[in-house]
Amino acid sequence: MPAAGVSDKWQASKKNVLRICGLMLVAINTSDHPSTGLYPNSFEQFTAAQASREDVYALFATWLAKEYDTSNGSAEQKTFLSPDVAVNYLRSLIHIGKAMFGSADDTARYFFTCLEGQTTNPKALWLKGLIRNMHRSMCQRV
Image (cartoon, rainbow, N blue to C red; front, side):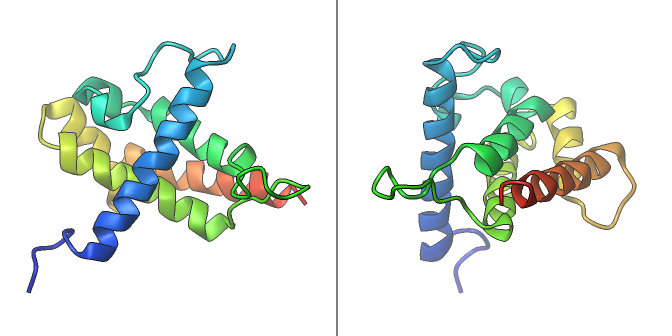
């Protein structure tokens, strides 16, 4: 049995989430967005300090909810992700960050406690609030 997190499906999903995150980073870095220049154009180039910041994931969540167009420009109207898929992508990116940087230092270890679902720690509550905000803004699109 393969080790956890290394199945072909997970590898394909991880590659897709990193690709989408890269699209967001390039879009932000080539615009007049307030975060322009704060992050590299690829999540793989992040430092532990960058990957342990709430604003990175909040930016990704907002971008998935409001900007990411799945039609690749082929449709007359933008096609957005469903809320469940967008939340899955957000959680996947956080899991990728944890795998890459989760043991880098105390700050990173603490940040990635946000993935602990049944807890009242501040990071977990932050993530629950972010997901609630994603759902709210995605419902307002229609």
